[in-house]
Image 1 (tube, rainbow, N blue to C red):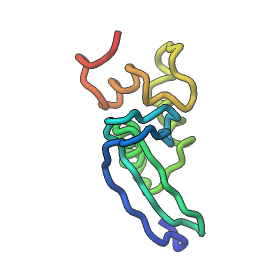
Image 2: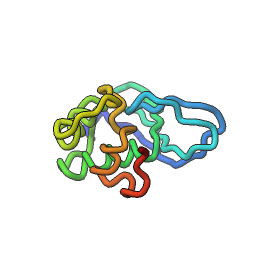
Image 3: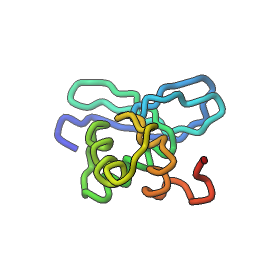
Image 4: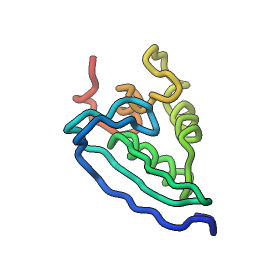
Length: 117
């Protein structure tokens, strides 16, 4: 992180109300486990929430590219290059790729038996 990074706190939670995932934009439903990251960076306060598979995709992106920072756009572009460019899928709008069964499978976010038909 740069010198403008003040603090950050990350925790796993179980949703007591609906939230919106900051990576895919879909709803995190009541009772669903999610990852919350609260930080102060460059004078701005952030309170991001992610589905478990979305934060896993972010972590894989950072690890593979040896980055310690990311943007949602960069993660989605990386997913497209790794997976979406190689298969036809009507479900994968730009920001919702981590919700696609093929993406989940190829990134190791789920096992083959979990892919929805």
